[in-house]
Each structure stands twice: as C-alpha cells, then as structure tokens.
Length: 276
Image 1: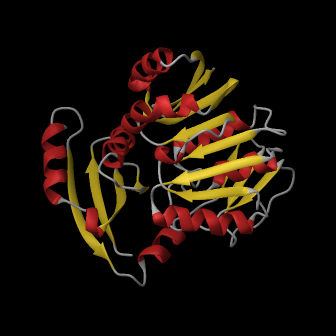
Image 2 (image 1 turned 45 degrees about the horizontal axis):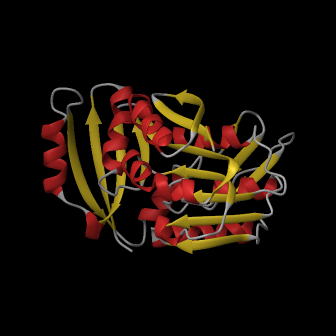
C-alpha cells in the first residue's frame, strides 16, 4: 500500500494540533510532529489531493496559516520511518502502551503491546490518550464493549484486560483492520471480534459501553446508530474533536436521548461521556 507524506509548517504548536483535525477529515490517518511546528501527516496515495490541500490552506489562511510540501513514500521504508519515531506512552501511571521493541516497565496495571503500522490509535494522540484515561475509570467487567474506529485495537484490548466479555472492534480502513487483528493476537485478546466496515454493521446487538474515536462529522452522522445499539444505562464515550466542537456533539447527543455526563480536555482536544 502506497502512502503520501505531507509536511506542514505552522506558526505555533497549537496550530499543529488543530490542523490534524482538518487533515483527518481529508482521510489523513497518521500524524507525528517532527518539531513543535512541523507536522507530518500520512494519507493513502490514491486518496491524496493537492487541490484539497490548496483549498484547506486558503480556508485557514487567516487563522492557521501553513506552508506544505509532500512526497510519495517508497514502499520499502515508509513504515520503518514511522516505527523509528514511535515512543511508548504511559497513561495515568496505569496503562503502558508500547511496541514489541520497547522495554517493559514495572508497576503498571495494564501492559499493551502495539506493533505500530501507521494505524491511528497508538495512544500518542490526545484523543486516544483521553479515552484510555476514561476507560481506566470505568468498570468493564462482564460488559459488552464496542470500539468504533478502532485503529490499532488498543482501546478494545484495554477493555478485554479490564474484564469485558464481549468486544467488537470496527474500522473502515483495511490497514487498521489488519493491524488490529495482529495486535489482538499479540495481546492474547482473542475474544475481540474485528470487522472491516463502519456503523452500517451495527444491527440488533447491544453494548454496555461504546467508544467512538473518529471525527466530529462522522460522530454526528452515526450517533443515532450508536444509540440504537446502546443498552439502557450504557455509556457512550466520544472523541476525535476539538473543544469548540463539544457543544455540537452535546446537542446531537441530547436529541438522540443521551444524558451528558462530563467532558475532559487535553491540548485543545476533547472527549465527552454520555449515559443512556
């Protein structure tokens, strides 16, 4: 699979964080900061459009001005480059997410091994970090959990380690789907059922906890389907959007019969929790 690497230079670090959200809506699926104001973003070459970047640059010229360059990543080294920049992540001193080539650490409650293969969801991004933090404070024992936009499968794997007995992981990206399958095996989380697709796969099966870490527009579009498969008394945690998107998320959730519980924030990104 061929990827294109887009390098964007912004004026300040916060601008880099916000730019990620806009690029995610253009199908960019992995991001890393080479420097605080230098963002590298990766998209399948078949989905890359310079016209779309030019339009985005024009759209943001007064708020987040940026310059850009891009290259097509050679098949033989793009994933190696990604792995070289992958660092372990410790969430709330309880959950350690790391690659097979990192050293283990003592004293954590949950150790998750993720082979980084460009799939979104390695806990580096604020949204994944926040949902891990939320899950650490939720009772998953004997619960049915749905992980929408599973990326690497890290959230589904954590749910299993916390005692969930039924877990679905869904992503519409084939690379993420394959990576989740590998990471499920790597973490002995075989009860996870992994699917390639989107919310259309949700039918009559019910879940006690639903995690949706995607982006604002998809969350707003698919929220009725999430609620349809959420048990009464269940929890829906959503992330993948910015602080300024919270009110739109809350409004849609309330219209769909959910009750707002709380929101957490990290570097301008938000995660909102609702009850049904």
